[in-house]
Length: 252
Image (cartoon, rainbow, N blue to C red; front, side):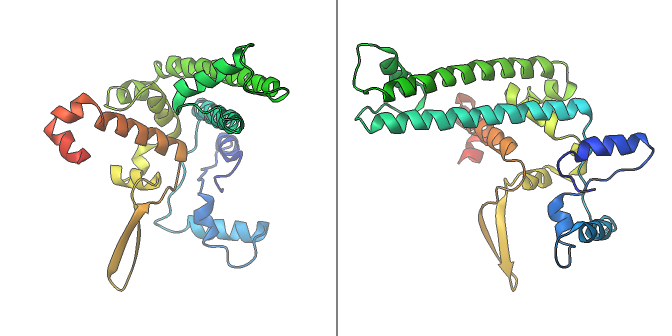
């Protein structure tokens, strides 16, 4: 089957009936579609793809693993909404000459202006509208805190989480996401293959024996990639990186 929406559910259901289920990434099956895309052509492409000895498959998630990965998707959506609303507040207030510094401290300065009834730099009815956005932001912040506490609590019961969190840069959210989304690490031959699946390696192009390396390809799971990059950046900027010769060479 293609690893599309509801694929993991149907894989579990078919597995209960005694079938051996293999999930193929849609991008891999698409390469075997000869002409127009339709159900018979897709089925033929899947049959052709599954027969290839070098074909890679997606590990079927259990209900618990799928639920753990899903809560990270919820967190990602709330973070996107938080960023969107924050940028909206900054943009509209800047139209009236009210500009604050970047980051949470700058946002707090802007919300303080909207909370102050005596500050009339933002005229009505825009002021009231922005106040509603601030209320939504605070609601999202509360939900994010609740979700992150749930992730930490659930992670403590997971052996993989407990091992990962001991590594430098692996804070609770990254450890929880890695344990939930990387179901079968043995599917990758090496750490380099896993990094390539997340788009963390340079994009390679070449012809005639010449090879050019570009920026990272940004393929695969963007959520995990961002968490890994943030964790690595925090480690390289830490005091340990400045005193450890090995880490100093890597950061250089």
